[in-house]
Image (cartoon, rainbow, N blue to C red; front, side):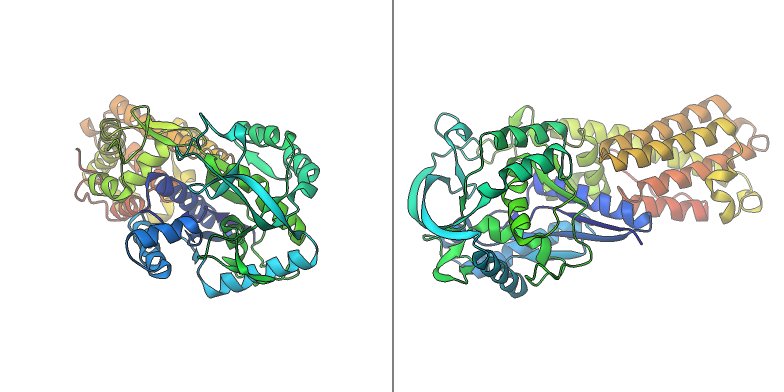
Length: 481
């Protein structure tokens, strides 16, 4: 049986889940559901990143212990993912004892293999990113993501020999052995690598909330090193490079563009040092802006996942986030844009087609003409309609292979429009007996549409299929706003 392993980044628990978190996780869920439908053995991993100075400070600010803070905020992520119908196979937490044990074992192996050595590290450190920055990374002397000046830190540290893998990584990325998409992100990483890779600090003196180094208990492990290994521990890895779980390597690792550099350098560097196969594909999606502006609490323009669910429902939210921009590019949204798209595509588009077809089916004796086995694509009598459905399936699957999730939805909605035009042309309600065949064909097409949608809109798809079987209309799938 073919296998498919997909990951999201693990999310910091210093704040509540935001729209970017939801976007990545819904996309991963859609891909996981798609390959399950194809009959593949699937593992979908997500979770929370719970160590580091940023978490420690956030906990102190609200008067809680770091562990209590992590426990509460990790549950907030789980709750939102449950509301969004996310079908993950494991929710990993970096405070899980099994994860901590495996990370310590891996660090011990790297130390014994001389990939970790003691030295002095000096650099510009952004506490928001929990990363060291170069001068070229900064804008007006500040981190562009957090708008703060990095701290100049010089301390005794343990360093990872990342520089050893510079040429290997260049070659693997250039030849797509480690595939980075979209192309512009691959080019950005190669440009960064052309400046040379330096050894990196993998220990912290000032951070208490973290995994203690097994070879020096005074220090904690750099949070990114700890976090990266979740992709292994989340599928049962215990820290032994010779005993890798069956799902390894990941087929797709999804992330936003702000973390691609560390995922394309430190992460594969660790794997190469441990002699573990690299991920097959790193896919980077864009950001959402609001009317051209970055979402910001201070600007008061943040849209939270729970707000969208309250307004558009679960499936409406899933649809709007994945259809609002090409997957891999930035998208600009607003409440006004979302409401307009929702009304046009869901109540007026999909919902209206479902109602029209079922209303026609109720008026004829479809049960004597149409059996469940005759709902298949091959049973569509109208040649043009059958070709249109076949073409849609081909392009739908091709779009998934290319991770163009929004294009898969475009093909489905093109088919919905085709059916609407056919109904208007044939006007089957005027002579029902004469058009019995086309009405049954439309039911078959509707079943195919529901099957395509089951990975995107699982609840709505199930309702459509149930209504087709009963040939009865229920309340509208999507109420107009």
